[in-house]
Each structure stands twice: as structure tokens, then as C-alpha cells.
Length: 333
Image: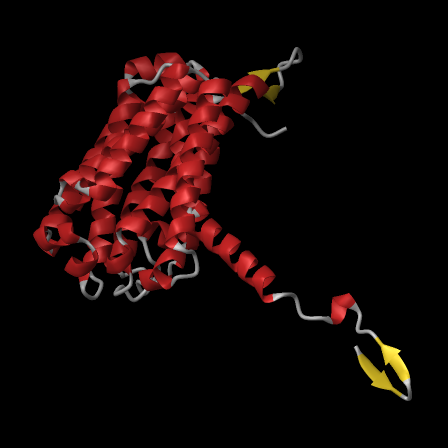
């Protein structure tokens, strides 16, 4: 309010700067969203793997045209969302546990909790809310078996965050176990049988990705201070682990596509046509974690590099299209 020529004028509310507390509130909300790492939720698509590979996601109309099975798809998407929220809780708890180590990391120090953008007390409350909400929905909307696996996933990740991530190789093994639990949970949520081949491919691929992440982290400054387990790793051991798990993943997937039971189930012997996409993805990931693909190691994790790498993403999309076309016998209209 000000005075001009004897008249009193009041500034419009829209022209006033917003109160400081409102700006801070928006900043905290953005920080909480960043803390639960939505870009990492792509890993939870493994929950949907059983319904995709067991022909339950799509049905057919009376005319024989493909249509989305809404009941099964709804359960699959809900299960994926629940695991995403649980993963968000785990990421929040992990950031709380690692807050001091993150503050000396050139990239992680900018995380909301490490930087102070999100108060630690609020982050604890937020993590508890995510856990209670996700497990509650799992029990009420899906089934107890799925909720049990989701709870086991949470317990495993808490054990990992507080203690077991400090033990080299066991830490990567637990990451792989988490992926296996995702697949099992997806099967339980949708009443879909999960094959041993799917579990084996998932475990080996997760080990491969986990060792790749450790290889990526080992290149950083103050690596051992940022993650205790890195003291026991070496470039040589991780390169060997990547080679073994990469070959094993490819070999298992090839065996799965050529297996007689697989061909009989899908009523086609064409699934092997997806193998080149799998091989390219494995090789491209190796280039990304080795820094020879032009990524410059600017991303915080290999997952971020993969999602920003055009060749990798394009290859993944083509693999998905090829799998759907072969499994569901989709043809151009």
C-alpha cells in the first residue's frame, strides 16, 4: 500500500512475491519427489515381466483382434506402483543412512537430504508413510502372498541399507535377489506362473547390472569413502564379474528362446529373433559403464546413463516391440 496524489493504492495480490514459507514448501515437495528417484522406477517393470511373457496381458475380441486384458493389466500396474513406492521408501532411508558419505560425493552431495533441502526428520516421516501406504494397498487390493513378498523386499533392502551393502559381492547379490522378488511378486499379483528360465535370466541380468554399477562407482573420486564395499572391489575383479554374468545372461536367454517347452508354450519358434537386441543391450551397457560410449561419466548411476543413451533406449524399445509381436502374434493392420 502506498500514497500518491492523496490517493491510497493497494498492490494486486498477484503482483506480490509469494511468502517465503510457500516457496520453501514447494522446494521441499520437489526435494521429496527427487529423493524417491522416479527415474529409477523403470527397474520395477520387472514386476510386469510374468504377464507379458505368459500371454496374459493381451486378450482377443470376438473378431479376433488383440485387446488389453484390463483386469490383469490393472493388477500388474498396481503391483508395479506398489513396488515403486516401496523403492522410494528404500531410497529415502538409504539417503538418511548415507547422508554423511553423500556430502563428500561430487554428485550425491546435491541430493535433497544431503544438501539440507529436505529435513531429515521430515524424510523419516515420509519413508514411514510410503511403507504403510504401499503395504496397506497390497493387502487390501491384491493378496497376502504378494504383500508378503513386498514386505520381504522391504526387509531385504533395509538390511542392505543398514549393514549388508558394506560386504563386497554380497551387496550385488542382494540387488539381484531384489529383482527376483519383483518377478515373483508380479506373478503372485496376477496369478501368473513364473518359469525357472525367467527367474534365472532375471538373477543373472541383475548381477550383471549390479557389477556394472560398482564398476561405474569405482571410477569416482573418494570411492571407498562413498561406499565401504568398494574397498574390496578392483577393476579386474569387476571386469571379470561383468564378463561372466554378461555371457551367462546371454546364454541363458538364448537357451530360453530355443527351449522346446518355450516354443510349445508360445506356439512359435521365432522368439530367438529377439536375441540380437539382448546382445546389443549387454554390449552397449558395457560401453556405458566403461566410459567409452561418450557418456563422460556425468550421470550418478548407470541407470541414468542408460535412460539418456539414445542407442540403448531405442534398442530396448525394439526388443519390447519384437517380444510383443512374437508372443502375441501381432501383425500390422
